[in-house]
Length: 290
Image (cartoon, rainbow, N blue to C red; front, top):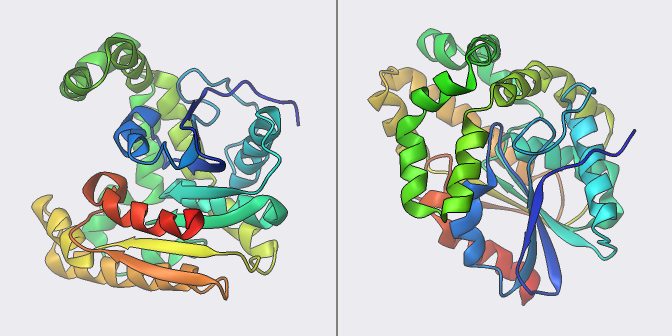
């Protein structure tokens, strides 16, 4: 595979490298506050996958196999020869699972933050019609493809509140780059492509066989907090509870992939644990610096 130019940033002065694989649609500006808390202990690498931000567009479908291959090209380009900690959030966790199976010798440890499961399809077999009408894979693909048809100018208006929020907390250079990031029609095409390939990616991860016996930490969101968030958006409480019960079981399953696996619950946190409970992640990272 031809090497792509991927946008990345490197923070910190620590001896051990930590690479962050973000969730679908994610931007690294959203992680800077968290990274500032760990850059004395780690050399932190965070990047935008192909099709996001300033990263080149790949002609390859957005499968976790292709994403893992592209990440490994970046690892080699940066001259990272020693084992590193890989941390994946949400869909980034699914990509990280694939990477760990492809390149187990490179991984010192894997941290999955409320990660998508390779068995995620179990969630869409539940009797949750209202929830599925909003967040089914088909709906997510449709919504993002429709959004991608807007001009950059229209997307700037659509996301004006979020852009203004970031302008308050980021340096001017970063806030301008975030504005370009969030208003890119290509970003939404990429999100749709990643969603379209979830099923095939999950099947391919399973086909790769047994997960390597490496240190593994799975950090899961608080069920009660997530149920409250769903119901605030009009989801029936019974559907939210059913969905969260299965989500938790899938997190437990992920933690059992390795004999060195552990499970941690981020109490009072919804999906974005690096924002709601960064202290939980910091505590888990101490496993690798002590």
